[in-house]
Image (tube, rainbow over all chains, first blue to last red; front, side, top):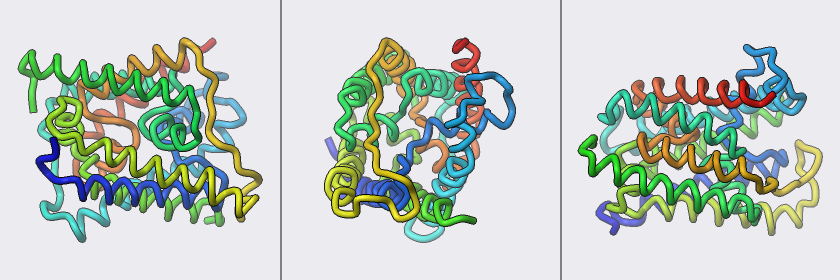
Length: 153
Length: 134
């Protein structure tokens, strides 16, 4: 069940929660990630979907949040990480196709693992409870099918 | 940089550090959860949601108003077919690749340049969703 132990997962999760809660308590903003794609596209597409006022208003701090995620993971890699820099061995087609579905699906669903998963559940949102159960269930089924088909890591 | 962005940057750094610390920046570890071999991800999501819930539902009540913002508003969304169909499509993508938006972004900081492919296609996916919204 827990070949790597529970400590890294629980401690990491608490650090994530402290970051998200800190942002909310000081600014009132929900530090969620999938909106980043839509708000960033507002710089490049004139379509109404991207030019909504909320997108324009949020696009600046959402880029900052994305930068923060990268810097935070970089700091970990340079300090505590036992393995240092690292590159995935998951096949290119899986990264590409998976990313496409993740981008489309999270935006249609208005949330991802951070939006529905962390901030939504923490906000006691019933919609997010449903979304998390659905995407986690579907992901578990999908990952097991891919494994059965032999396309593996 | 204004105060809001400074807070977001600092909180984002903690967020990214926690994602890397918990191994969520490694698609292989996320996939091992989804294949039910290592259930640790539950503790990452649970731990993060619990601490955030404490902030949203308890601490925010004491503070009343954010120091660098207008008001506290929990994150709620209306449940519709879009929530469900979107979550199904997201779930397939997550199950195929082990990538989700936040962990993919943080993964760049661990030197995982391959995930740039996933981030690029996430942008395309988000753009296609915009094309369908007329």
